[in-house]
Image 1 (cartoon, rainbow over the protein chains, first blue to last red):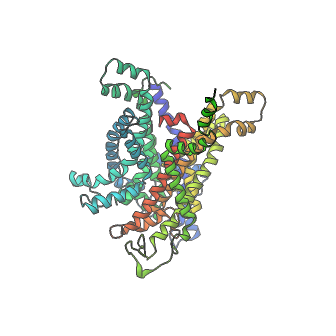
Image 2 (image 1 turned 45 degrees about the vertical axis):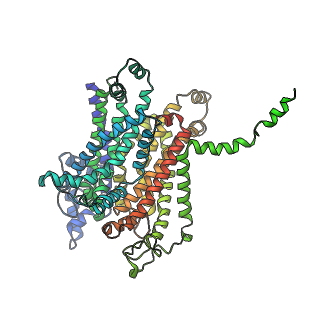
Image 3 (image 1 turned 135 degrees about the vertical axis):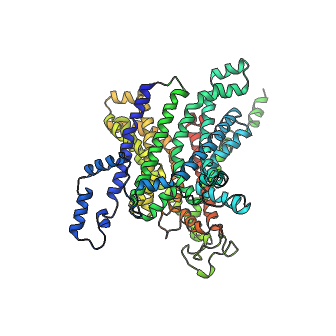
Length: 313
Length: 296
């Protein structure tokens, strides 16, 4: 098992290498000469040349890439063009709302979606099953930002129950923090829950058709024990996989959701950076989110060895 | 022995029955898929016949009539420049449908080509699949955002950016199909009898990838429409002078507390279109891939 974990961990290096190469090319190909921007309007050609030399911008592509990766590994994501602050600092300032939103979404989605999928598979063909499937199709079809506005119209403007927009840091009290998080969390949870519920149902249907499930029922085990102890345990690997893959959709959703609810998180930072064409920020954020996605999926892959001890790669 | 002719006469007409029965059967077995197909057909008709559906020029400004709520004259109200939201929403269907269809077609074609090559040529497989893994670990909206940040806002660039984000998924799907196919006796027989490489791909491999790619293609069209709207919504998509559902919603963003209708109607249209395609895709999958259908 240890060898598998080591091998799987090492396999993330080429993947992150491709991401880094893509992200670096983004800045390399971006329009505008950073040396000319830094030098300012009154600079002479010689000034620009000197700055270019100082920044290493006259070096070949792969030498520049190497230097960039080296700085990256030391936690240096570059300097924002617009604010002149280190990208790392800007991201640190914005990280709390995004992490809070992601964690609350996972905390809502998983305990709701997995039981929904289990019940749908157990009651396959009945109205309960059909209701869960309708929920799943709707969850895929209503885009995040459309759902966000529907929820705001209903709960904030119509019923006046929750704040319309904004974010309150957890340092300013738990009540307001939670209040501001309710609607964004529901928004993000819907399609994620739809995805997880659907795969849970499919995976459970497969397992429920197995002989050992019939044996378990035949020897008189309680339904709950059969469903959870025998069936869900064996259906766990595809469910874990989809939770990991779904993180990519969740990240895309966070960017949009933060825009609608005016949450000052990393998603909002992304949108502001696009509008200002602040490439170092866009670069840093893509790297960060991709690294998060790769790490979550590494954790999922490692979890296979616990979920299904038969797995030996 | 007189009963035989009467019996034959009483038998139902054998030829006519299946004709009516087949349509009825299709409806009974896939009611949601048919509903999806009908809804999508209506949306396509709406996009084609947009100029004749009681619309005015979607760009026509009428500052006197700005921010009017829905009424007999302005079915979906007017926006902050006095443009008719109904006309803009109807014309907006063109952008969504064109983007959805183009991305589905381009990413399927490129994905099938790459998938067939990676499935058959080991050295290319090792390199190309690492690249695909890397691209797949960048969330698709972010990947599209990055490409849009490099280029000018145009519909062609939007289609290109979303296609790049979707190609790895098709490639991986096709590669999986090819890897199972190449172990099949009919492919081994073709190789053994000296059939050329491209002929094997064309005759034996390609036809077997059509069904799964068609199913995947519908889901890609749906997700491409959502991505286009999302990109336009945050200001990194279709140029603002083209009315697309995402653009209309972006314009209504700062006004949604006073003029809910600017956001509501394009949002509903987008959701309905995506729903229609998803229902159709589910039906296609049930029909073309019975093994998968049972599992989902």
